[in-house]
Length: 309
Image (cartoon, rainbow, N blue to C red):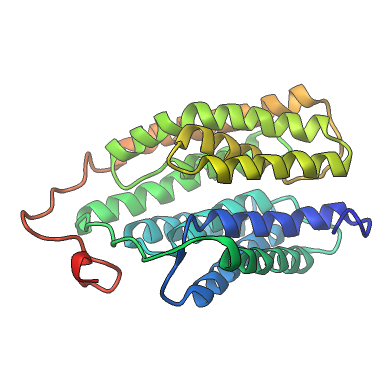
């Protein structure tokens, strides 16, 4: 629609909102599905509009970067259907910094919200519905505090590095670091191994699309094909899924055309920088999750044993 009315850049912003909303929900929850989808659209759009309104390197940028990381970590610990929307909201914040369209941050946030609401309607219509997954087992107060602290440090280090990186999209560096962070060292190491190759190849693919597909219609077709492949592959095939996720996230940018190889190399180096920061911070995390008490069943979001839910 954006291309049809001569506003390809604005259409890309709305499409990004729809994309993040849809990939936040492999299945739509049975309980309060429309309220959950609507809340997710607002969360994603809030973070995106906030990112577009803040200058890279400003005091507000560092403050919000830390708060976004803490929100992502808290949602990870709590679980529930809003875990992914909050995590992808933090991603939207970092990717929106420095990407504001001519209409300003309100226009950016409004376009993003319109796309996210459209994505919510599509999700409600076509995605399967399933009961919410059981809430994750408690990590303990000390372990949870270490995870929150590690997330804040990761975001701060990544944001500091982003200020000094000569890149057109420096926000990807802290975003890449936060995407692999999990509550324990074991989980984070596994995530880094799973995401490492997929993220690097996806960053290269996203850069190539940005540099090569200068025609808006060709750009849209390539991104649409990647989204289709991602949803077909599914998150269980994590390496290939991560490849598509990274490529699409970095390809939602219709800026001035550039040579494809430098753009791809830029995205790869930013991803490597994010993984290095995660490797540096991993020592702050607890080694592994505590073993649950024998016979204690997992509990759902309401605290009821999952087998009785």
